[in-house]
Length: 166
Image (cartoon, rainbow, N blue to C red; front, side):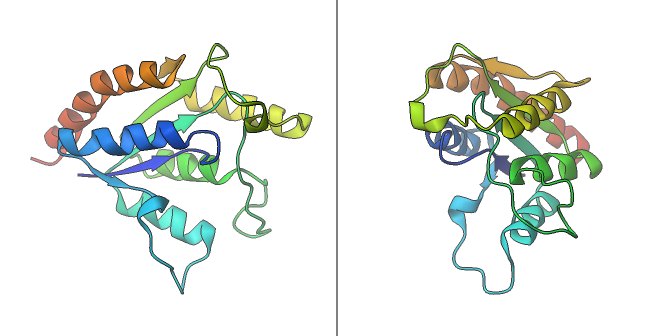
């Protein structure tokens, strides 16, 4: 089963890598921008959303300090949402199985990995609320904590996918 891994990349690189590395041991094929070659026909939005469409499930990691990259497109992104939030919303719309991991405020991060702009803080808070509404999610305090919670969550995701696609 193909699983899209989504998050901001600058502040959550090690976290993304941990999930990408863990997926194959649960018979889940990671799908992420890291595995792309140059794509001549797609821009960032279309390439990213295509990954969600072609995946069987979605795994999202949301930080506590960064909202992420906001691609400019008045037609496809009129609300000026982050790429991660665009991906999440499409996964919800397509009714994909979703696992969400949210960084807690206890997680230590480098000073450069936080955003001070209040508009982005408000968008991040709204996204975190949306991503957890009516959903079971895991909050992590460290990279090791995320790894431990992924070890519990990924087998459950694999089981859901197997039962839906016998």
